[in-house]
Image 1 (tube, rainbow, N blue to C red):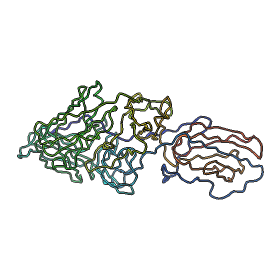
Image 2 (image 1 turned 90 degrees about the horizontal axis):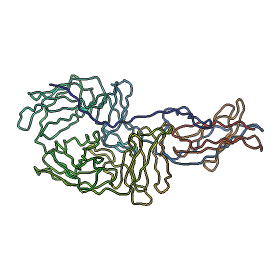
Image 3 (image 1 turned 90 degrees about the vertical axis):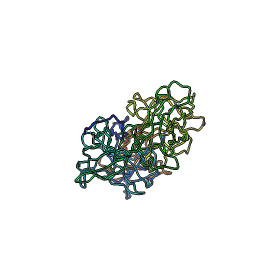
Length: 505
């Protein structure tokens, strides 16, 4: 028995934290207390809880707010992962199924596949049932012994079959166990529910099942049926087909073999590679039932799946695609101007949802969405995708750890697209007192005008309608004297933000 690793690209949420000192003296306020949400719905402005009498001649500060852009908040957490029953929380990301992606609704029950990050950068995948409301718990325990035997449909042991228990090492490679001449394998895996066990062998249909690993260990007997290799050719005249990815999806009728086929692996590998000649090969399919084939390419709108019958022993498929000639290109950067790689960019119609309900087959997020064009920014932050025909089309940018942005293509100006880091907490401004040791009053033009009296050395916090980019003009005056004005231009607000006014003249 031997153990080996196979390279794998694992999609994982990387939360970027940034504390930046902004221009004109503004700075981000301390994080909001636990429990303060980051919802995009408007919230009522918050002012001082009780009126404070302000003496005549006290300074008054007025804040004029101008909205420049609205940000899209990242999804709310759906899963809480922890080490054991009482151990510390662990980073967790939804990989496939319900709740995966960037714009899912916050409350919908279903099954999801999550990646939990352990010490040293290792990850384990777990299948988790999500409630319609609340957060699901995923517990990862101490390592337990796992072993088993793999045979073919006649009971003959299969040598060199590969067994994967959903673990990925720090280099991004799958931790697999390989069977010996007796078809046996042994290894270990962190204990827990929903452990995905994938078994594959040359010429055989790949199979997966969710298991529970508990002390003293996990024992499995696996039978692999004969498999089918599907050859696919894209029918298109183009020289950049290597950017295409092929996906296999279930149709309405799912045969027994397909019900056990690991569709979810496509979320980890980004589907199947297509070479420059437009050829792709899918191995390990069962020889029964029907599947659909989807092609994703930055110059191709989301298509309906093309059906393929797997009962044909010489199964081949020719998939016609038509790449767009008109293109949209751009560059995505963070607030410091550094390029952002891995940003998902969609071109879509107004009102068209990016969310698609998760399925029992744990398909990659947004795969079933039709009619959109999708691209991913390169290492230098650049992207190219097909220009949609609709005059009112929207460019939507989403990235883990950053605020999302929707830009109407008709109103887009030249220059980089900026995605600020997402801090979380309530989007609001915190107005600092204009002078030490003195009561003061404040006002703001939001919500048709709000005012407050503030005790000495007490700041004033006002909720903003949504996270976004704002310009604040802060004017401080005493009585009817001319005000002392300070402008905070183009502030990206993804949580509380402090405004420091100038003293009155």
